[in-house]
Image (cartoon, rainbow, N blue to C red):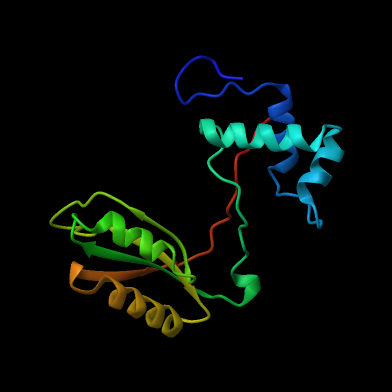
Length: 167
């Protein structure tokens, strides 16, 4: 299933069928992978093995739930950005990412002097006050390793989509 290049995964017809069947989301059933296998007329074990293989090779990045925040009453979406000591950013970033109210966090390069931030953490709330309270919790966690932060609020809702194959 690989083309011989490290990290590359050549998609065959079955991989493409799995991607096409899931590109609008997994079936909303008690056992979505079993339902998918049945739809594709494949053994469940093969579907699971192929999905894991595509993830391991990087052909697909992740399989995750993508909530519709507005439908859930979550109207404030704030990307908190942090200027954290470079020697501690990885360890602290993992702690921030593990917080139950952080949907995702990651390290990014700084671009001084305009952009001193190296740690990003997405926080959602029903309103900005909720987001700010959660950001204050992150600030307490980061403590003296944090030299500054800001919150960048979403100004519009963008449609989220996963991998798409044509044809």
